[in-house]
Length: 116
Image: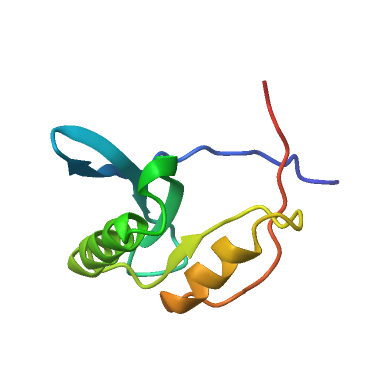
């Protein structure tokens, strides 16, 4: 007799941090850091999302400033890895190079499904 499979849902707390950069009273860039846990590791991991710098402030170190702060916060939180994703559609090579200059390495493949 085959045993019936059950599915159980467990909830974990995720910490969300929004890091922003300001110049002359205006926000010129921001990034999100999600700090998450799972059962496979003792330490949490971090996910970087939506790194954005206003056009007129690009190539002036704003993104670098955001990422340095984000990496520092990750270290303080004890994360064991930090993940950053970027589209691989042939238009983002400069962004990919920038992540590599920051110390990130290309790793794995990302799969996505848009759920509306």
